Length: 162
Image (cartoon, rainbow, N blue to C red):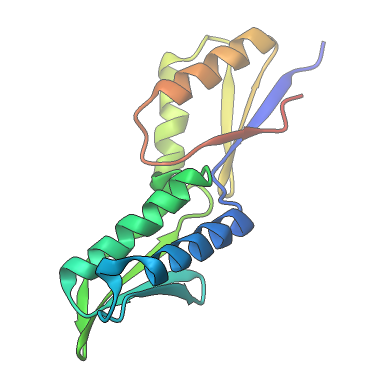
């Protein structure tokens, strides 16, 4: 019997992120505490760029964006927000959406699978994702449960189970 396998990836749906951004923009334009403080959030290339007249207001804009991302099913582990910095008369925060699994995170996941997963499970790093294979589908499902319960800094999705 052939080995069963699945891939571990970390991807963010760009359309869902875009929808969350539009919802955040709408809330910021309507909320009273954001009136006359120059609060905004928008795309800047592949990053979110948040602006406001004070450090507290720009942090509040980030909180609104985070809430909208959660509502759209995007984990905050995928959002890499920087610290507020002054730019002229306004404060800004830049935030990236992480795509793919970084090499050091992939090595941690690989080691976790080797150490704690059932014995017949093998994993290998393929670029920015991992392929996990085993003869037993039950072992693969146990590995998925193990990874869901693990405290990792990466938002993981499991795809291509075959």
